[in-house]
Amino acid sequence: MMNFNFVFNRARNIIVSPKTEWTVIQSEAQSKEVIIKTYAIPFMLIMTVCSVIGSIIMVSNMGFAIVRAIGIFGLTYVGLYISALIINELTTSFNSKKDKDATFRLVIYSSTAYFIIMSIVSLLPPLSMLSVFGLFSVYLFWEGTSILLETPEDNKIGFVVVSTLVIAGVFAILYLILGGILSALFAAKLMG
View (tube, helix red, strand yellow):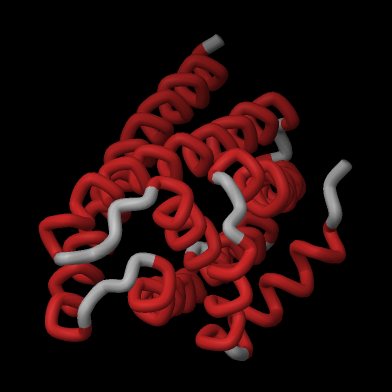
């Protein structure tokens, strides 16, 4: 059973006081499976519901809305997973601790600002300019690297920059794929 109260409290705490919350997260030592199940999936479900509602409002096509929502759910899940795996492999290059579970915690919990803003933008697409606030996730990642992966201060900038580029690259590729699929479906619908 999903505990939305936990998700709300964790999201609030990591946004309001990230240093304190990263320390709490470090002490929990949850596996990647638990983090995905208890935090990422509830947020992805919220994003999915918001996407369906937003698509119906903007496009008035239930089929398109459902396909788009499923695509966003899948894209987010795959994007987070691939990003965490790649970043975990890069940790030793930046004298950081290589720990798959800790890296998943870092990637997923630091994505909180992205989850929140994408839920809002999916619900209300005309507010897409607010997407820039998703960049707060980079700051959250920054704060978490020293605590979860013991990244030395002199390697922190490089690690955060490279990790941000990895995440952005993975999501850009996945969004291009999703965009191509949705464009093809939408074009087929218009022609058929």
